[in-house]
Length: 313
Image (tube, rainbow, N blue to C red; front, top):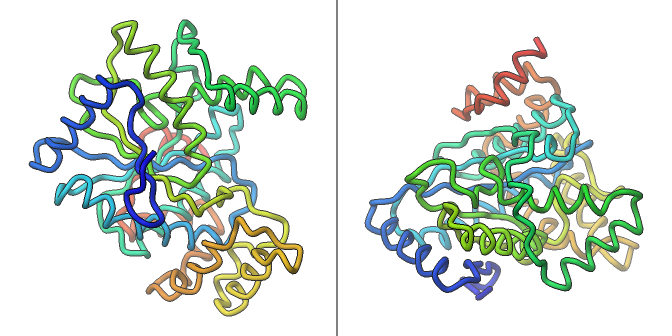
């Protein structure tokens, strides 16, 4: 990866021909001749933290870097929930977490089209795609296996599926895929290496790949959907001063906090000043309230999510 700006790293395909094709697609995007889709993943989320607002602010701050990359081409945003890939089918929690992030993105100034969707639960990366993984990544899976019984295979499958069309979309499911741009925190850097191994294996087999780049926000160390025990929940946005103070405390290592939260603790005051951010709390209390909020913000539900949410009523 190379630095695109002070806080953002640009991730490119590792293999030269793949990288060249992606560069060509970037050129087409800059000429307005290629669609650009920004993809943001949301994992299993049992408790929505106030930090989701700061994460959205961090993503919005990447927009200038995105424009540097693709010019004035207007992107679309695809925000997906990966929980079905982990065999977690809590539709309500997944829907509300997707609603919280997408609404926060809109409140932070992202006016482009936003679609929220569920990843497909079935395997999309063929079983025959078994790349040799970088040593560090292989060791990580081994460590997970020691910590969680039977986790090695499931974690490996889950990592493989990051390349799936319904997730970060490295494998093409159409003839004219355009350019996909992964936006995420530091953890996406680990999965980027895994995805590139998948891409290389598929490329050698003659498979169709989507030109892809990543904008990695290096200072975001802990996924927002995995809140620490000390940080405030989404209910704290009703009292911005309290939310800011609590997250700052949770990020302070001198108070037994986690320094990995520092960037978002710094961004939260600005995030909570956006018009309408205080309405995020009532909008994620129930599925019905979330649907109304999303309609008001012109955020679209993908077909799988719309079907799953419809079954709740």
